[in-house]
Image (cartoon, rainbow, N blue to C red; front, side, top):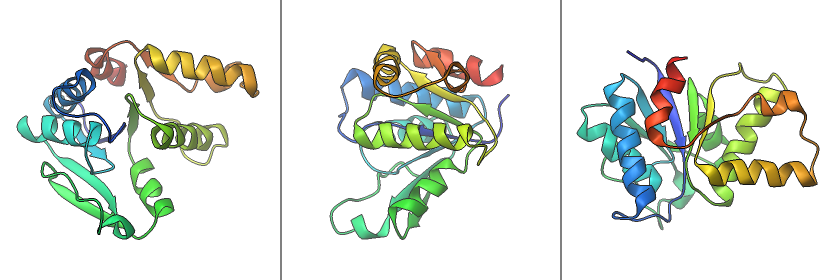
Length: 174
C-alpha cells in the first residue's frame, strides 16, 4: 500500500472522451486505490481527470490553483482540497512539494514543470524522488532535448519512463 502525495503534471487541453483523459482518469483511480493522495494544477484536462479518478475511488485530490487566474479559470469540481497560490512560482513550489511526480501528455507548461523538477534533482535542491514520464512522446522529447542541450547520463538516470499508466504504481513501489 502506498502513502504520501503524488503530483501529476499534464495538459489542460484534453477533454472527456479523449484517450489521454481516460488514461488520466485511470491513473487517478489507481493512485488512490494504492493509498496515494494526488496533487495537480487543479484545472481541466489531465488535472481534472486525475482528480476525478482519485475522488471516485475515495481518495484525496489536491488542486493547486492560482489567484491571478481566478477571473478566467475555475478549479475542477473533483478536488478534495484547493490550494490557491498567489503567483506561479508559489504554485510550482506547492506542486513540487510531493513524494513523487508523474507527467502525462502536456504542452509547454507540463514540459516546464518536468524540467524544473528534474533540475531541482540535478542541483540537489530537493531530495531525489520518482519522476515518471508516461508514454513514448516523453522518450522522444527527452531524446530531442539531448540533441540540442547537454544531458549527461547521470541526468537521465533521474527520469523513469513507462509506456502506460498501469505501470506507474508498480514503478512507485520499487
